[in-house]
Image (cartoon, rainbow, N blue to C red; front, side, top):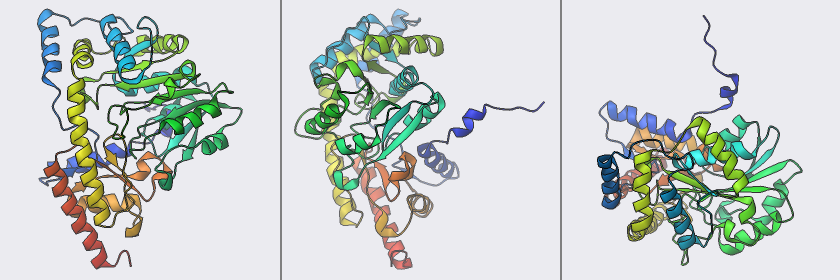
Length: 397
């Protein structure tokens, strides 16, 4: 028997993030001490109230399937949270779907909206899943390379240039993984103005909305006039609440889209983890202070990391969101892949090549600061030593 897998899967490249992570883990299994900067995983423990809520649910026997939409109590808390934090109004009975992490919500949204041949505009560099999901759906990814000199924000002119009669969906990945870019209100208003006279839908991935270091709260494009009816907002608990392994996300949007996403969800997944849903209710109800505590710590790390990188000669703009920096390594004369490979094997520091997030990431690397300051200091010392080694080798002239 000849075993054949789907030819469509040949279009799916392995995650560039996981490739680095697997190499680093292999080195650790061989006894090496590797410092991990490659995974966007908060180093904070899940807040105690949340863990206790999960324990209480288990003790009560709340371990069965929930509604496909998610528990009504959780959807009500999500609606209250979206109103309280971002000024967005959603009906828990038809405009909110609880998903297995934000990634499932992204997948369900793209598959619900995109037909074969439809074009999906994807600002890059960006999170790794948008393009492969679009391709597997039969859609056509249209990458829009964003510029470092504009702090990797999408402009109205760049959007206009990418729109064709086949454009169906715009993905707005802000605050952005990997760049940390944030779209200010005036940036979003310019984008909204381009879209208002079109039938283009928006998928706004706002998983990092709470990790915003501007002097004002995060602004959702769905909050602008005429945008809620064409926008699906994706968010979740992994980043702001330090709940990556709990696999809890949600989508909010027009009833018609949420209904189709729910059909997909009930056929593919059934429901999000029940225990995690009960824990998520408490997260939204009681943990605003915990979010702020973690945000302040990330902010301190962000400023420290940007300062050190610039001091050692790796040009790095100051990101305003998420927990990543995206320094340029062009001064070394190495490609992004070469830089990351050599740094890993020479100094045992794992960072991700910018090309893992699209071709426009060439010349950059992503570094996560979801790690302790002592961890950051040790890794930065190793990176500085690596740069000195390159200079001695004459790599950069």
